[in-house]
Image (spheres, rainbow over the protein chains, first blue to last red):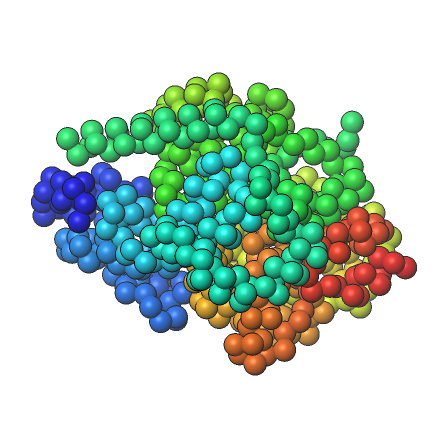
Length: 215
Length: 298
């Protein structure tokens, strides 16, 4: 439990719904859910083993104040961003974005499942893109395969994964769709400095606004 | 001066040597025939993609898209922004909606943009290339330049998710959009019955949780075979990559014998318009589309 997580739990006491309305992107929509379950039935990952709760259950648990169970759930991280639930919801809840919002909040508080692979990939992806302004696909793959979920370099795991993916990689290189030289640079924006300053400012502003709501 | 001009947002995966570089090549060929002028937004950046939610947060994501919109407005005033990538289009259009509907988000985004020396006044329209083709040109105009009809070729029109939801093409349904089928037919091809045309390929989970994505891709490919398709055609770079690249892994796991080419609509159009296999970037497919290559070589 991070200090910030404890502070937020104390600040919002028994009102987890209010906490997410203030602190999570699109959280203000949660109370609109009428528990029909169309989202669950529309989700492409719902038939795979492994998710704890479908969206409508997460929303009811939020209202029931089951804070820790929601924030540590792997459910939000199952989202493929296919927007099926979003367009089918009879009450027009932006379910995809609500799930992203709760996941992001759990991630920010440091309580999301540590070894969750999509959490890990999401972080790698953002850092990759934010570094130069454009995604470097080779570095993205290297970071994904050669680092464990806590960000530590793991050579053996990486080699194993790279071997598994070898035939795909060779096919892509032959097709001109993977350039190993991107390891040493690759595509980037000219105004990287401006982009980084912009992102830093955006993050500060967002944090300030959220802190004000909690004040 | 081309017949129509747009501010072009090609996206990271379309860059030289990247995973959908063949998409860009074929789009350029297609646009040359249709006399569509694409001027790249100078120094555009990544849209953050859907998976950016985990680390990005809302305002940093809006700032990324806001920067592209501000650059388009500054350098290419009055032009609609056109994206070829589904995620780029969705992210940028979503940003436009949020910025236009929230004074607070717009104000904060402007403050962040100042750090990059930019400012937003009027946000341009944000459109997908498929929208442009259908709405600004229309099927008849897309048929006109056809010199090599796709007669006898059968296509499974795989629309996927993000070109279709939550925005989609005006007048089309989310459950059974018809535009890709109509596009194929306007080139002389046959659009087969295809149950999985809007099924998700797994998106970014193909990287993080491949077994989940593979199960979904299996259904998508199987359904194309069931419909009797020779190849799959799609408007989305991640759909293309996921559905093409993992067929081997799926064969290993499920004992299937999948080996069906997955093309971009722009590749198919370029061939129908008489472009060479190289101009249509058919050499960029890992599972080669031999029938199209033969047609292009005629």
